[in-house]
Amino acid sequence: MSKNKSLLGEMWEFLRVRKAWWLTPIILMLVLVGILIVFGQSSALSPFIYALF
Image (cartoon, rainbow, N blue to C red; front, side):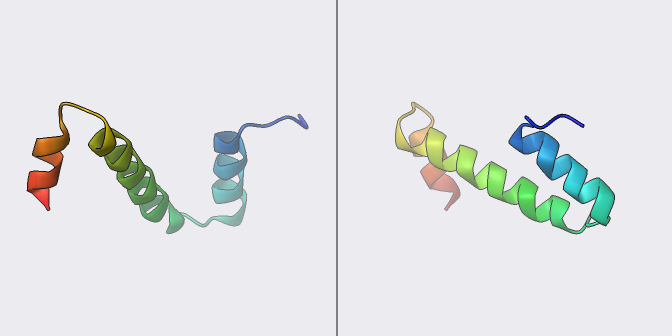
């Protein structure tokens, strides 16, 4: 196997080998919240994002 794997490759292999599919929604929500924070800080979309909360 390759020694240099990306974070996504490592995560995919962990989920596949350990059969930890219950982690998938948690990981997806963390990624979505991260994207929301990035766009909420410096974007023209900020007023619309803040209106959601």
